[in-house]
Image 1 (cartoon, rainbow, N blue to C red):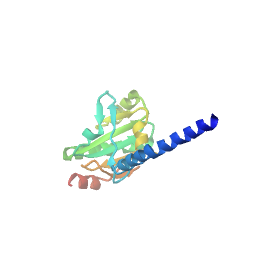
Image 2: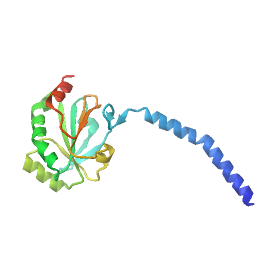
Image 3: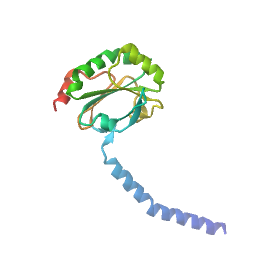
Image 4: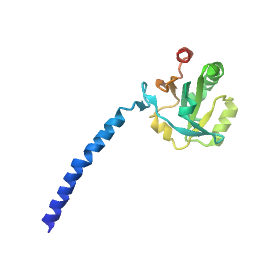
Length: 174
């Protein structure tokens, strides 16, 4: 009886392997051809996050036909705080030309972020990545992380230092 049961189990596994596994391989291959990701040259992976005031910002609509500068950071990070004046400047000077700056705070309360916004007079939207889901999605290892998307939503810059104004102006004029 035990031998019959083992033979039946092996047969079922073989049938499963023949019919199910090839479909999974084809599905993975089709998915791999989609150029969505988080590296330079990929179309930016989509996400939705809430602002400190509870308004939802979805990347696809925020960056639609705009150049977007996504800045991952935290209130306790000295380098993140140091680049805020430059980001404010970019937002003032280049917003009318089509630049959208978005601060993405990782794993902090709305209260802390609101305090920083007030203290540093941040003039661009800040969203809360409370569970660090988007930070993990974008493979954030060190902060600040600056990610620039062109008007097509493709990542053209990814670095811990902010992009220079020449790059942003060039992208805005394309």
